[in-house]
Image 1 (cartoon, rainbow, N blue to C red):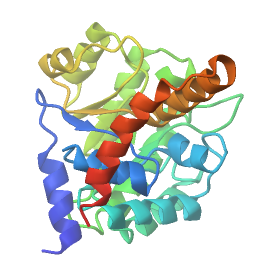
Image 2 (cartoon, helix red, strand yellow):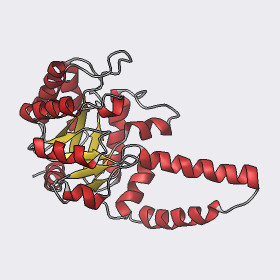
Image 3 (cartoon, one colour):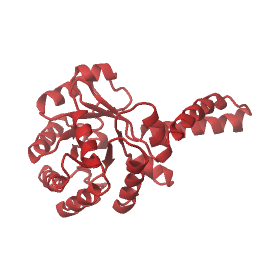
Image 4 (cartoon, rainbow, N blue to C red):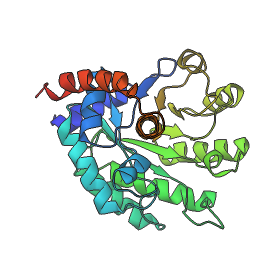
Length: 272
């Protein structure tokens, strides 16, 4: 068994309903190493976080650049890595297949494909098209033994809070062969319980304002919790607060937080 197969197998085994895998999303090599040093068992890329490092908004990075970025993170830490492949960087099923096929060569343990079209007027693919795209991703994923494919239903995160349609989509993705199901934006505990009950695959939940605690999500049967770009945004928030303190108050209270960061960086970057 190759190192990639071992990581994929480990990653798959970490998805236990009721004992959620906490999977943070680093945005560069330094943040990946820091998070690995803190004891997380798996990591994932963040499309918005990666874009922010380049001074761009989410959705502005193409397939090749995203996969090159994922490769750099996979090579930086010895943990299973999941990649946010957005909508496969393609509208058609063949394009999705090609993206997942290319992602396999990066050495990822898993990847995700979403049903967000990127079209301002019609942001979500029809269910039929979305299922065809997930089926293509599943076919490509079969080329890498053990690769964990996550299928995402984006209704809630794009102002379409239709729980019934979201569940129907995830059930269809499950039937198409997806390994993990993910509906970012769902945050009400009753909705999460209903979702978990209505599918037969591990469910990932995204950290959002108002989300129930990890303990409550565990009790609901959630198998994975990711943070998306929120850690990256928190880092930018700390930067903004520090800069405003210096500009507006002329004080240096931010140095306490900087000290804590420096201490963990010393640990993380000395592991090599």
